[in-house]
Amino acid sequence: MSDNNSLSSQEDMSDVDTLIKISQKIDGNGYGAARVLMGAYIYDDGTVIAIDRVPRDPLEPLPGRIRLFIPYGLLRYNKGVIIKDRFGKLASKHFFTELCYRTLRYEGRPWLWMEPPGQAILERTSVEILKDGIELRLDFIPPYKGRRKISGGRLRRLFSETIPRIIRELTATEKKRSFLKLIRDTLEDQEVLRRKLEEEGYIAFIANGAVLPRRGDTDFPMPNAVPFEAPKEYTTEFKLPNHGPIEGLCIRMNEISVFVGANFHGKTTILEALAVAHYNHIPGDGREFVISVDELPLIMVENRRVVRGVDISGFIRILPGGPDPSNFTTNNASGSTSQAASLIEAFECGVAGVLIDEDSSAVNFILRDEYLKGIIPRDLEPITPLIDRLKDIKKRKIAVIFAVGALGEILKVADCAYVVSKYRISEVLSNKKKSLQTSYGGYSERENELAIKQRIPKPGSIPNGKVKLISFDEVTITWHGKRITVNLRGSIRRTFKEKSQVRALAYAITYASKYADGKHTLKEIVDAVISDINEYGLSIINPYHDEMIINLSMFTRYQLFYALSRLPTLRIK
Image 1 (cartoon, rainbow, N blue to C red):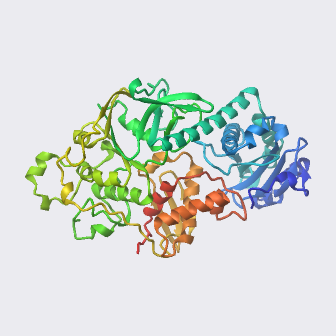
Image 2: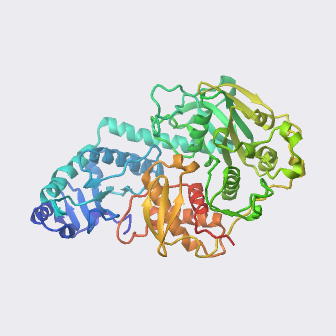
């Protein structure tokens, strides 16, 4: 089903009174009778409702689908703001998805539903911006009563009361017009700032006044939180087209940076904000101008994670039981091996930088102090700690950003250290004149250069199956009679913004199987999937695209690479 097929151009439509009469006629019939509702119907004001799919059973995994076309003349927004450029289109998709969700949260649920958007502005399929209006895509479950008999009364109210209420709630007011324009202008400023950062050699920026702490386990800002602030002498100012001047702390590319401070003063909070700084957050989120030029994955311990064919020999020379560390494969990685594998995978993916928090790291992977080095002979120690590999990592032009409160040895190799006190930067220390070779007495001079292997999956090792279960913690795919579970509980768990993003990631995994021909590397497979989405739209990964549109929102390159790397079925040549 084409995303660009406007309902307004259809000629074979009945009026909505016909739809209401059908709803009354099938009252009390078996659930399958609701399929007679399928078709397109027009309201008196020009709104068009198309019922594309009706589930055969209310518990069917895939819901029904309704498309609702609303002309711009009825919405009364500035059409130029909506369709002028990609900023307006992306902002409008988020804005109308949010308004529709808020209306249906209490009104239509569970029979009519729009999934809520998150705090980031993403490419999505829940709303399509057309030349003559917008099109909402809604989940639809025909109301039933008793033993799954159609409730004609509830159906009638959905079409005669709920749909008109959605249209009224989406209709412009001065406040809504202003907020839509604010979203669009903020999005443009974020992209301009991201481009300026890259041009000037910075990997990330944290604006003064940014609100970084989140409320509980949610993605919403914490009320009355202390805003971020850096000392005036260490801030950089940029001029943005809509916001105007903005200043904050810049973090340089290709450097070792450390946020250091006492416990509970905001070091981890800063890293968590940087981990999602590749997103464009909505106005009011607090992190609108916490910006990175690329995704900065948090590399942490993931006990018992799946690893397939990763070369961790640069960090671990010998593994218990004799497996080859240059082709490490396991279903049950330990703390240090899991973190080493995740770091190498991030480099393999091609990230510009990584985040390391001592609180979620294996200490023996990060460093080994001088006292123990004097006691334990080098030939008995199987682990080369990360601190001894930072020189190699810098040669690859990859930034490493640490958060530490106890591992002070890291400061000896840092290019820049930011002292964090009460969520603010109180001091900036620079070690630029020190070299990594002389500032830390490690084992680095005895080691070979770090090797990053580009893995090639064997044909048939990426499942082209059916997505059965989607949650923020895991994705389950059935394939050849088996249930394959991809664990998402690691570092990317908190980088997901909404469920439709995880759904898109799940479909992208199965779509990626078409490129697993034994010739493409894992990175090339990910790039091919992203390229197809950029060219054809998100619906290209929808296995039901000929039948119905499914609500999806855009994931990142690293998220797909992360998921494919944790496939239990993955086999490497």
